Length: 368
Image (cartoon, rainbow, N blue to C red; front, side):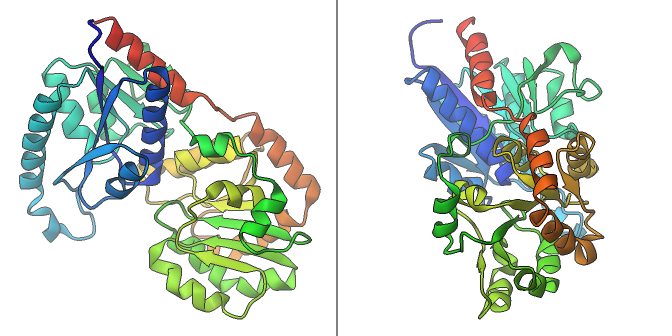
C-alpha cells in the first residue's frame, strides 16, 4: 500500500457499551498511526451523535431504527428506514473510500459492514458480550476478524476468525490516579463512612433505581453514603427522594466516572459487557443486577461468568426491590468479603484490548 493516509470507518453505537469501546479503538489507531483518518457512522438521535464529537471525531448519522417490540405500529416504516440507511451508507463509503470498516454493534453497524463486504472492503467485528448478536453472527461469515470480549465464542463465530482481545476500557479509567479522598471530596462526601456507587449504565436502570428509592432510609441508618447515577428518566424523582438527607449525591449522569470508582467501596451495576470490563480494571467489589431483557439474556451470562469465579455478587432483577439494598449495605460493612471479591475480580482485568484490536486492523490494512 502507498503512503497515502489510511482511512477507517467505525460503525455502531446506541449505548455507552458500544460507543466507549469504539472511541477507545479510534484513540488506539491514532496512537499507532497519527495520520490515520477516522469517520464514525452512527444512528441519528442516538447517544453516539453527542459522545463521538465530544471525543474529537467526526460522525455521520443514518436514519435507522431497530425492530420495536413494544409498539408494532412503529415498525411500519422500518423497511423504508432500512432501505434509506443502505443508500446513505453507500454514499458515505463511496465518498470516504475507507481501507477498512470496524463494527462495534448497534443499529448502524449492520448496513455499514454489509455494504463494505459487498464492495470487498475488509471488515472487522468487535463483539463485547458473552453472547453473539444476530447481526454480528451473520456479518462474521465475511469478516476478516472477530474480536471478542471473552473466550468460548466458537458457537457463534468461525473459530479461525476469532481473536480474544477483551473489551476496550476508557484510558481515563485504566490510568485512574484519583485517590479515595479526592473521589469523596468531588462528590462532597465524608471520608469516615462507607460509600456505595449505583450506576445503571449510560441509560439508567428502572428496577435498580426503584430498589434504591424503596430502601433509601437504610443508608443513613447504617451510616453508609450513596453516589446515585440514575439516568434521565428517574433523575427528578431521585432528587426529590434525596432532599434533606445526609450523604446522598444524585444526578442523571456522572461525567467523571474515575472519581466515582475511586470514592466507592461497593458498586451496584448492570452487567453489560463494558460495565463488567471497567469494574474488573478498577478492582471493585460489585453487586450485579443483570438487565433481564437484553438480547438472549446476555447480561445474566456476563454476570454469572464472574460469580462463578467468586469475583462478584449477583441479585436478579426481580429480587432487586427486596434484596438489593440489604446485600449492598451488607457487603459495604464486610471488609473481608469485599477484599476477597476485589482480589478475584482484579485477576480478570484487561487493559490493552484497544491496542490489540488497532494493531490487528492496521496489519491487515497495511498488507493490502
